[in-house]
Image (cartoon, rainbow, N blue to C red; front, side, top):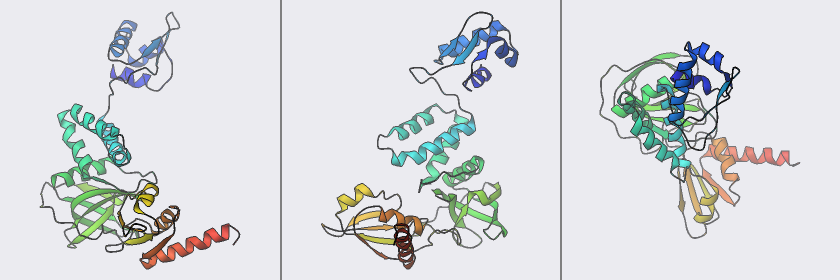
Length: 307
């Protein structure tokens, strides 16, 4: 019956004979399984006769969903990223329901991934190996060391022993933040550069995160520890908060007429564009990289507008 449902979900109309042949069952068994799908709430339409066809159509209610283990993990990841931007709470509700109906063999794995993800910027689609994502998420949640082969930006390959803390999604992709045991420092690693990942089973006591910012590896275009973008807007906090989504960082009132935005973005260029689109006068208080990027942006806009 599950194979039957998989075939019907491709959206096409299936001749009864072809469908029975693909499944290797009799026409009687086919009709029985189709009736079972209807009883579960799947709206299967049919046309009778020798040339009869079957097709799964849209219904009025959502029927039970059948997900593979990989699909369940992917669903949790997507809902976890959507939840912070969903004012209705529907994403959080879906996460709770999914957690309640998952089989025990999968529930803890999925909950670990959901708990370990720290949503960052959602500006561009990113790709990640779900197996790596799931393994690191589970290890971070259960405080287990990991070992992996890592290829740096220059192509240098090293072996790493890491205490994973959080998975972070930024515009350039997925990163894992953790304590590098051999280097004695916080590091972040791009998931698409990780291979031969293993979890030996040893555990660690979580360390306190640095008070400044998440440390990004050099060469990613991301700010390093301590580099904060600081912008003062000449407008009340209530006005700016309606126009600027502070995904990373915070807005604070300076007085009744001005407010300050402090953030650690993954790209100075993106931040220069974001603050310019708020539509109120502002001053870049630092760092020099953001000042320089803002000037380059102003020059490009001026040139595009004919000087």
